[in-house]
Structure formats: structure tokens, C-alpha cells
Length: 462
Ligand code: ARG
Image (cartoon, rainbow, N blue to C red):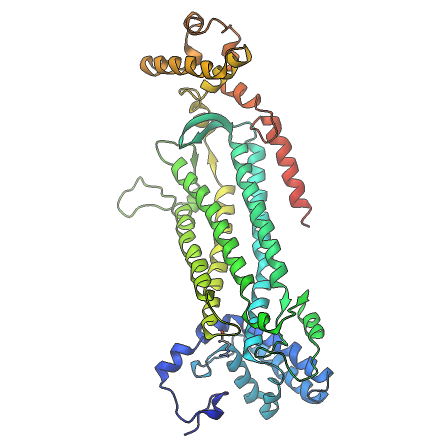
């Protein structure tokens, strides 16, 4: 009994439908339909130009593919799981449209270099969206940082009050992280922007193909120079997943702070109604669901990276069907990161910042203890000794509920005679912030300079 499979020549038995379904990828790789047609058009043009098929056959094939692309755009193409994957579905549809000449399209090509080409194109087309979204997010952070260059809040280590910082300085820290994410996704383009087509199944082809021409047609910057590598490399996809995992880690850390800071206990910020949800039972609730979801989706992103790394591990050269598992991870993560960045941009642009509350958090605590220790150190007291003296004062302060700046001068001097009346200015959070002028420090003037520098980075992208 013969089969209807494009590769069915040497087969006698027909697999059961459920077996076919296990092997099929059309339910997800149909997302690459546009790229598959695009790649085939370039290939068909090259076959004609090189006289591998006649110019008129090439033109017929190209016209058929262009017509299919139009039907695809109009939502008129229907794929069939019997045809396994997007490559064979398109070929079958082309055959229905233009007849047997469609069979010449697959000359000097294999599905192995075809799928790699489609996948490269798919990622190549979408990386710029990630870069644009990151730019918008950074712009939003810089706008907010400009408004809050002088907004004082508590800085934390171990989630304990550490030293006063500005909210602007905090925001710039994330802007730096997203800058590194941007750089990584930008570099990701280098390894994505390479043409595998022409590697054929694994060893290259006997036909006189012109790979440079195909690369140029498809807008690829470079071509693979080893046919085995061309069909087996998924580094560009792994780099994307790894960059995405790191980006989601950054978003998740910030999400955690947004969630924590909008609690009753902190009350540093409030998320807008647009980016919050209520409770079906507790009428007072305003939940940071979207920040939570971004934090939650970090899990599936890490999972995708682990899944593909594990799939690729120990795969012998060249193509193996295992590699069909690459696409769903990348498709899902692309959707996830684009949505997550967008949600964050929206959430931050509508945030309400409770400045007074942030400032107050630095005034009833002991986050100015380092100021007093530094003050004594500049007066010649060895820092370790100064640390011990201030530690004693803090202990008294905790017992008597008296912050350092509210202690009487006589009491401070009893602990350290070097202390003079100018200490009260030194102990103010604003002074603590503005004296931190070392490069990268939190002083307001520094923050303003850094905002300008980061804006320049963004402008350089245009
Ligand atoms: N659907 C396959 C994939 O996604 C296409 C390549 C199939 N090649 C093969 N030799 N079976 O990897």
C-alpha cells in the first residue's frame, strides 16, 4: 500500500493517525508559515538564476508562493496534520495550486536546512521588537528617575534599612540592567543573522547553488560556513532563551519590590487601577496581579531554557528530530518577554509614588548610623572604634525609641567627645544622600548626571 507522504517512496505501510500526530509539528510551526514561504521564494529565484531549473519554472513557483502568501495574510490557508509540518504543508498547497512543477522547489534543499532557515528568519524578524520594547521601558524608567532624582527613600541590604538613597538612583539601577539585556539581545542578532540554507541535508549539495544570493534576498548578514553546523546549530535560539531568562529575572526582582512596596506596611507606592485587580470576596483589596504574573512567568522562561539546553545535550551531528522541540519554547518565550516588558512599561508610567512615606522611612530608623561612624572616623577615631561607639548609641536609641538625630548633644558627646553641633546636619538623610558623590553614588547631582548619560545611550540607538 502506498502512502501520500512526500517522503513516502520507500514505505509500504501507513502509520496510524495517532502516530503521525506525535511526529507532527504543524500545530506550532504554522507560526513560521510566512518565513517558510519567504525562504522558498528566495530559493526558487536562486534555482532559476543558476539554471538549476528553468527561469519559467522558477517564475511559476515564485508566483504560486506569492499567491499562497496572500492567502496566508488573508487567513485563507488551512493546514493539515497529515502533512506533518509547515514545510510539507506549504509544498502540498503549492502543488495543488501550480501542479507538478512545484516538485522542483525542493531541488538542492532539505527540510533540515529549510527549518533552520525558517527559524532563523522568525527570530531575526522579532528581535527588533524586543529591542524596541526595552528602549521604551528604559525611557519610562528615565522619565520616572528624572521626577524622583531627589526623592529620598530607605536603601536596603538583607531587606533591612541600610542607608538612605534616592528613588531615582534605585530606578537607574534597573535601567542599567535593562541596558545589559539590550546589549545581549543586540548581540543575539549576530548569531541569528546567518543563513543555513544550502547546507541541504547535512553535507552540502552537488547543484551549483548561490548561497550568497539567497542570503542577500533574505536580508541575512552572513552564511554558515559548515554544512553540519548549519543544520545542527540552535545556539541563536539558546542565546535568545538565556537572554530572556536573565531579562525576566530582572523584571521579577523589580516586580517583587513593586508588590512589597505597595503593601499596607510599606506603602511607598501605589499601582494604578489599570494594573491592579480586586478580590471576589474582600472588597478592600487591590492586588498587584500583573507584577505577580511577570514574576510568575519567569518560571516558564527558565523552564524553556532548561528544556532546550537539555534537548540539545548529547545530540550527535547533524540533524535529529529531537530538534523539533526547539520552536515551542522560543515561540512561547517571545510572547512572554514582549508582554512582560510592555506590562512593566505601562505599570511604571502610571505608578503613584508616596514621597513623604519614603522619606519618613529614613527618619525614624537608624539608617544614618554610618554617617555618625564616618564622622568620627574623619575626626581621627579608628573606624572600628567609631563603629563600636555608634553601635552602643544605636542600642540606647532602640531602647529609648530615640533616633540618633533626636539625641541631645551632651549625650552624644558623652559617647564620643569629638562630636560637635554640626553632627545634626550630617545626620539628616538628605545630607547622607548628597554627600555620596563618588562615581555611581546616590547623590542627587550624580543621579541627574547618570540620567543624562543613560539618555545618551538611548539616543545612540536611533
Ligand atoms: N518539522 C521538522 C523540525 O521542526 C522539520 C525538519 C524535519 N527534518 C527531518 N529530517 N525529519 O525539525
